Image (cartoon, rainbow, N blue to C red; front, side):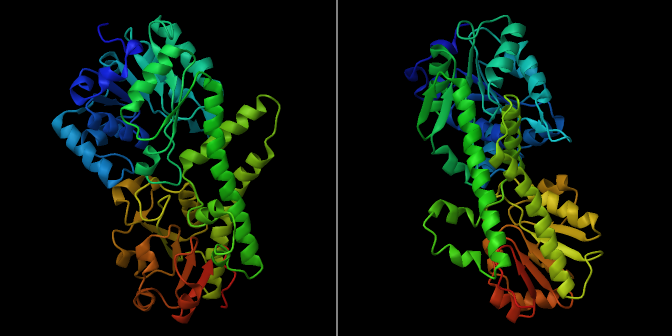
Length: 458
């Protein structure tokens, strides 16, 4: 092949004209995949997007991506219109026409709470059977320890007939977006790992054209896989610890929001306002847990964190039930509006992992649930299979209870007098993120409950 990525140098891709000689195939059209597609297209590469999921392909071809920020939504539409991003529904065709392949297909959790790599393995087989000599494959999704070399590498070599580091390249470099805006994540350090220098150098050169932060390079893929899982686990453990603190405050009549002003650990204080992660991050706890079980080790903190999330869901439902009971209303047939399900306030992100679980549990107990998030469209919320409110007025009118799951600014600015008048008699607010002041809420005639805020009087 005339353009062998394994021999690429920084000067070969130091401007848009040079990058236009290369095609980048993005396999996986979820949020991470489309972010990569936009980054490479903006940098001047020709980009081909593909996925085994036809529904995702159809949306992307129309310029629509899952939970994209405004910047990436606009970029995607513009790039598709200009033809710098093309969408193909055949993975094999997309791979065979590219020199650089970025895999963003994510692992799944089965109904038995086990990691399911089957979709990723099928994708790798399709890629392997269509690879051209001189191509570079970069795995951009977190994986279990050893999976890149034991499974991905073996599939690529056995099916393609090429050898990693000689005929084709293979690298591991996930993009982690946890707790943060996407743009901020792009400015942080990113690990690039490969088992030999040719792949490592090639992946570093290519990723260096789109990442603003420093690249941390290593030839130890297992160490990189482990580090990524540790980063995710640390965030989840911090969240579980804060949930424990919040529950303690609630039971002892302390306002955990007030404690933020006095804590020495600023990192924990920051998590207090955004401590419920999305499903994508939480499932990697199961990856780490299974990896530990494979070597006859039980990670007690990880097991505690997994259990903590389930307990948090139950606790939120119980807060809603208690608020309604104080209004002399049963949970059954109560109309509850969930306000905000984005992972972080004032941003368009994937939903919090617990949002759907809370909604499901409330509905299973007979409540009528609707959802409103100003940063997510009803189309984007359709997969949650609940009624969507298009406006805040619609989300409050005729409701028994408002459940604030994400502290968007417009929820903090609620006109409580007007809101209470639109709701059913004896309205209630359950605030999970400290968006509203409990004393003000009670003065306006609401029944109030708040996660960790043991200061309500009614």
